[in-house]
Length: 395
Ligand code: AMP
Image (cartoon, rainbow, N blue to C red; front, side, top):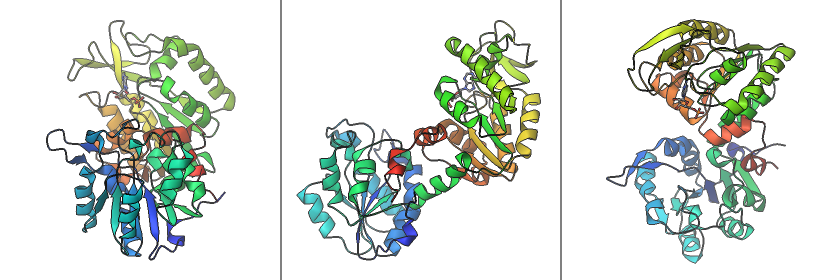
């Protein structure tokens, strides 16, 4: 079913409730916003609404106050940051529903912006409470959801509210997420290469199972690779392993073979005896991890083979670092894969908090087609699950 686009909605003079994800981080000393990536991500939508004369009511969750008014979890500190970016004053309402909020909304003029207090101060938000949804819906004539990062949650402000709003649409960020992610599970341009990594198989098992039949090649790195290598009977020393998933890893390897997929595991490793920065390290072949060592990164042969596969791709999804990229010198494999993805010229999508941090650290973020802002939401999407916040926008 179709989701209406923001550009197709006439917002002039209308009250627009815009759900965003302002789950920012605050500086512990000053209490001011210190990482405003999530604010910046929704500026295109807010600027567009303001330029077209909407009366903008912005709402978001912030951390987990669990239905109580926790002062440290107020959205108030975001006002100054948002106002700076928009170049205009932003009003603040001390709650997200109720008569005082309705009065503040009624005062808005075309182009004005009002930020509401943390939705999760009300227990009904996380319970998808229809009553809370009704009160939120009463604030506006148009509902815009630009909170992709919250789309996997059936919460009142992303799910129950949507059906109550006759005019509902995706914001520009949400639209970009849907446009970029949908081809991966629909009709990807081929070859379609899936690069998966990160600590464990368990966190991404469903993603592997869902993507395996859809992709042409799957490249595995990071801690999750060692459970697969164990399933192949190779020595893995002290490397990360999920003993309870060794059999499952074996089944996945067999399934990949049955489907005729290119399923690549590391051909060499960077090993160390200690999990710490600058620990003495060496490169060993696939079957050469010494007993007392752990593999903390993919080696140069693996980088070369994976890069060759990525260079042929027309579509790439990357989720999960290929090694312990937070620690030198175990970041090289991940950074090299980031370069390969950035240079391949395909439709490239990077999802998951750690991989996003990795492409940023590698300095290639501007050469990736789409960097998904929603870690949990993009993972659930890749698992093939319906995202309640996206489904609720359909008309
Ligand atoms: P995830 O959240 O599952 O994507 O896992 C990301 C984490 O996996 C990062 O913090 C990496 O340091 C860690 N990681 C990647 N490769 C390895 C490895 N070979 N051994 C241990 N941890 C790893």
